[in-house]
Image 1 (cartoon, one colour):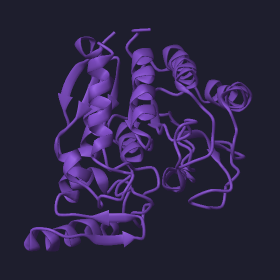
Image 2: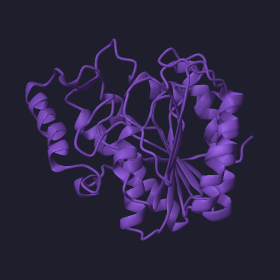
Image 3: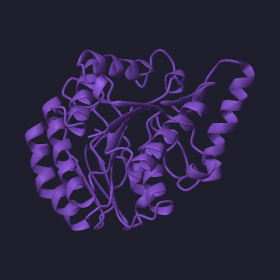
Image 4: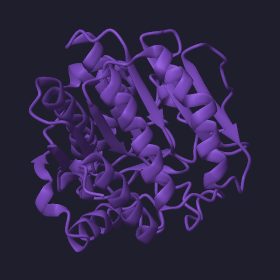
Length: 312
């Protein structure tokens, strides 16, 4: 199989203060672990391009986009500093380019996978995306990278059905809001509840977003995947699968209070991959979301990528 690893140095230049857990060191930890695990030679490294603003506009309002672009432009004029989107989400002078690279990686990976150049891809990018609402950035997220890629697959490539799998510890409220009225997109997720972003859940046939209590462990998550996710995925028959790959449900990650380990992420990835092979020609694009304990994050990404690349 050909699995690509998309990233770009611009994604490390976006930072929100030394105190912030969503930090550039996350990407460096992943890169280091990929090398130390000796799987780097089996991946195709690709540089993330900048997304066209028109592609972002398929998901986000011009006001949401301009809030990022214009405030970053003001910081660029100063040469330093931060602009607060909210208490947890900051812009620095490099945030606009980082956001374009993050969305651009997801789009480029989608293009390459659909063209048959790649079997699948992992995008090691930041800022993350699944909290970004169509109308506003929030929750460490500027633009909805996975949502933008999924909409690109539907509207540009003409796919009829896609699925989004989100295994971050937080509810992907931005992704859900984007596709709430679009039955072409099945979204399946689990997330700790009650927990940030404290959003209302919507019941519908194509939104299978399952809240779980704090301290939920891997065996319980595996059961809900079998009982909730897989029947929905098989019924939907997606032509491509997108993964919001957050690793902050790991038991070592202090952001949440769940109990997953690397073996659980590998198992989930195998199940997703099996569905993709049955209905979607194996086509998967995975994008980094959360994961803030650097060691646990890096080990979990390697476990995820090993499955994607048939390197177990």
